Image (cartoon, rainbow, N blue to C red):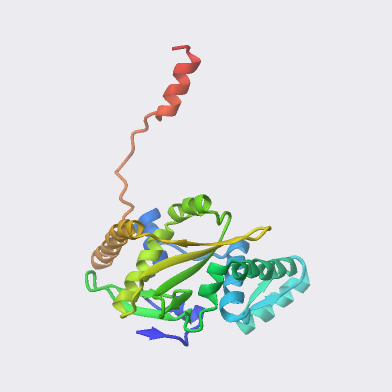
Length: 265
């Protein structure tokens, strides 16, 4: 099922496994996923704002006072909550607009963002035929003409080498396969999955990163393993870390080398 009329809040409130759930299991454990709570931060709000500017014309963000202190901020925050909008400081609001411009200044990123056929922030709901879990995904952009799915990322380093490290640090590769898998189950063909990465600090620069078939295949193994772990945990109502009962600490090799050097051996 594909829906184009769900808000971001309505999508997140839906009970189904998301790519964030899968990444939590892969980066930590099923126990950590089961006990996870969502907590926003200024950096996360900044990324949300850039997404909103580029994908929804900035209709869900509000420019607030210069600082988060004082009654002016409290009053603005209360009003923003009533309207269901994200409040930013004046500086962050202006910076988010400058950051979003960088995405259009890169011709490859701009092509995906400006595609007339592009489906932006459509919510996809399916059932995994292997685990029977309900899955959900909300791709930033899907271009049905070119069969390209794209996701915006605000990052500390959008360069080829820098963003490669971010991909595997935060398991964006797992997100790429998960989104593609959910899309496939919804009868959407994805030939390429791309990240439109833009620096989150000035000077703002954007670059598109296309996930290779090799990267997607490796991610597939991890994603399916995580989904099976989640399904088993739900079935047995058992959520474990996967740690041993206790751990015997041995000095790492670098500590042994340091000790040998200092002893002159």
